[in-house]
Image 1: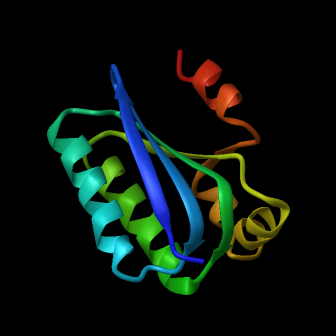
Image 2 (image 1 turned 90 degrees about the vertical axis):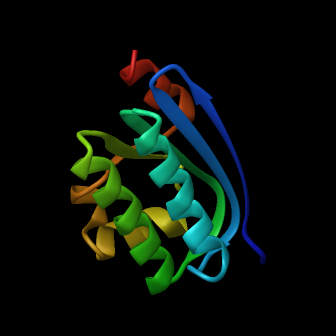
Length: 114
């Protein structure tokens, strides 16, 4: 399933809503570019909503780690929200749940960032 996304900024937080399979194809560099632009705009919190993501490949994991590295290098943070059970298992198996802050819902993330 082809990956699509929407993004929006609110104050010091950038929200990225991803739908489809995160496989790091031609959309991967575009997602990294969104983070680069957010860093340039002095955004400190980057929230990636995974509610509509069915599958993440190893390349997709690389895209997430690149995004996290860019944000942390500028003093920011990336938060993941609403992962499906399949994506949650992947985060646990790869131990990315120890690297990323993962929220069960978007509302929980928004509340935490207030």
